[in-house]
Length: 402
Image (tube, rainbow, N blue to C red):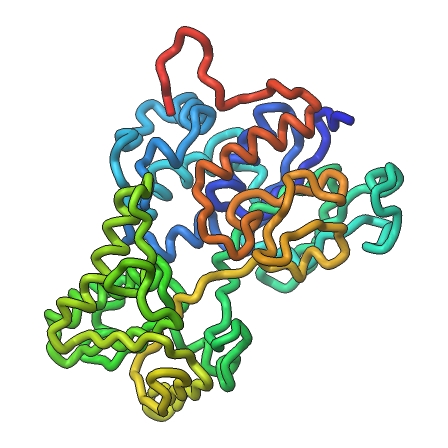
């Protein structure tokens, strides 16, 4: 059954998919409240120095570009085939889009969502029955001053991503002993080893944990720093020995449609072969415990496996992936994959609640922004009960804008 405008939609998360979803909804005449725990694109800003795997044209939409063209005399967007950094993407596309007329008044920054639930039904009531969708959804959020706010809506789109909840470094995915206390003192994202983080990492003993593309990015950056500052040494710990057919632990997809990603994986693996005393790879090894010593800012790390032992490091960088924050969804009826914590279907048992973007993929890191755009298109076709509704479609006879 269609939910007609001007119904109220709450969108959680002011990243790429949240901003695009809000724009899509506003264009269709819905009332929108967009909540974010920080500023627009805060997660993108954290790795703003890193070049994106996909070209600009794959990370914007025809609708978004049209909104910018209507708002600004010269949006000065990058060419479609240009690989911009996350910071450039935020400054040139996402931030201006968030400040455009259709979106600007919807955004409530620094509102952390605590819970999403039904106004008068608990999780246990009316599973699969029409009555479940007859009461509004209630989103409880807390602002910077600690004040709580309740937002009642017909629909909620959770586009909050996974960047705020890194996985734990323990061998089985649980916290290593001492990790909860030490975690505020180590890094879990992409560092800027040639820029703002150079002084903190130069001439330090550094532990990098993980074998994904974030770890590969940090290894490549730190390797450059280590060649420029001779006392810098990097120890790279991975559960894996070598990826299938590779010289190192990072999987290289031979027919990868994203050449930048393939190049990064190959480069990180090759550094193990070419290392000149500044990089050690310790495979088949996990973290058993970690203790941060505040007096000298050192980490004492107990490793298990092939390189078992107690070691001391000045810096720890943990790139072991992310998981979705499901705590705020505890009172909703969801059907999630037991393997990834992602959704099995865009349509959930909870009426008019949708998970979009990277959070919908859970722990599956294969998500691309283009997947999120397609989800937006599909979810509004469902909401409006209009199978052919597609605001991203190119009008007949016009040139391709995206």
